[in-house]
Length: 385
Image 1 (cartoon, helix red, strand yellow):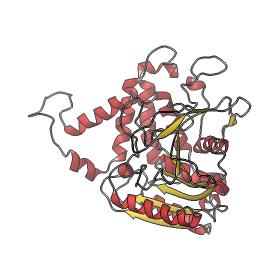
Image 2 (cartoon, one colour):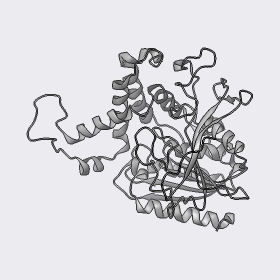
Image 3 (cartoon, rainbow, N blue to C red):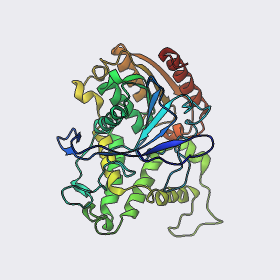
Image 4 (spheres, one colour):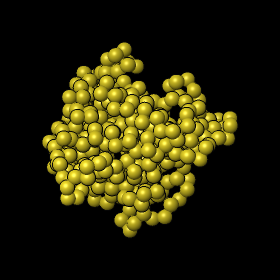
């Protein structure tokens, strides 16, 4: 493990890249094998003597392991710094918090930008297809390597929530509790359609070079920026866009051209431009495809409840946001019904907000209170009080 300096006087972090030997490959759902697996990760807090206080935090599509650490590329605070920290729902003084970069990512974990051991060049499109289950399988390898038999909790929103569900289906014996936020048990046709627009934007960029842009010293930044712009629209609600921007102009009058006349246009362009500095285009292709392939019931005779039949001892919390149209409350209710049908203990809260899907990143007191309350009750049941 590569030690890192203290993040701040309030919270310390440790992490780096965990390297598995070639003799411990990651076997993928596609049938392919990844030798020499590497996982980028960060930890916060300390593992207790009984190794019962570990919490795995799973990131969303464009996230990474820097959940509560200063990002090494952007210099910005961690994407969940408002949840992870002293006195916050995920308190490192109480829990040992782990966050990994998913397989297929671009922040230390093996992905399409990693060196292909057969050629020494970046994998590019030679990288095998991955699934949410593959991401979870890699996380389980890391957790086991850390000497942790059972996670106190696995927590995640959006794609992170899908990982939570996959953990419950594949490794229920390794979980005490699970928190699934703003997610779904499978990707809808609309979700797939938006992702396809983004992928086509990347692949239409002349600098994509059939996925070999790294070897050729270029980057499909324009295509990736457009993909980010399109996706970002789905993370906000119409009410949030109207409240933040409306039809406000950037300057007096119209340009009578194709500059960013409207504030919302400028905002989306900024989102796209800043994204390309920290994310790899091929990783975006692979991870969005993994999301599209996600259908938890498909591996269980098409019955979602069957996926959770061995998870009756796990304590579940499912949360949704009323204005989330990417992963709607109806889809969260489907998850809860399946958990109930499987005989699992499941709590459900729909949070009223106009902030849309991205509400779990934002200041949302009811989310904080619900998460804190669930973890507190689970900690008492676990004997961590």
